[in-house]
Amino acid sequence: VSQWEADELLRAKQWADDPALASASGTIPAALGALAKNAASTDGIRAIALFSPQGAILASTSPQLLTDPMLGQRVAAIQRARTGTASVAGPLWPTASRGGQNAGMWLLVSAAPVRGPTGETVAVLAFFYDADAPLRRVRFARGPGAAADPYLIDDDGMILSATGSADGP
Image (cartoon, rainbow, N blue to C red):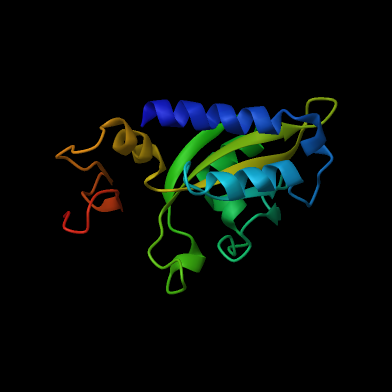
């Protein structure tokens, strides 16, 4: 999981460092939108969003999922990125998942500050991942015929992601 966090934090930082992103203001650049669409099946990216330095959501590749207007102020990774420090946080249970088509969906978040020409934070770029995203590497790395299934479990013992078979726990 720590390697996944490092990799995804690097991804967020690299995209946030793109000078074109600082001028995007209110739109998700086409290349970033394509990344979300193409990566969703393999990397577990559920959505990509751009937040103002105050935490307001400016744009998202999945407005039906990211409906909480306070999201940028409640999620720790986005709060830290607003102050200039990229980070990963989760799990998050978005408001939109409480009864809709995404019911019960947990998400992980990586976020990085988008800096203007003088170095100030002009926006925050956030990636929202399926909770099993870190485990996808484990599942594919263990090879065919493996006897064990990986699970992501929180400190209270709640299973946040099930990557195995239907007869798992």
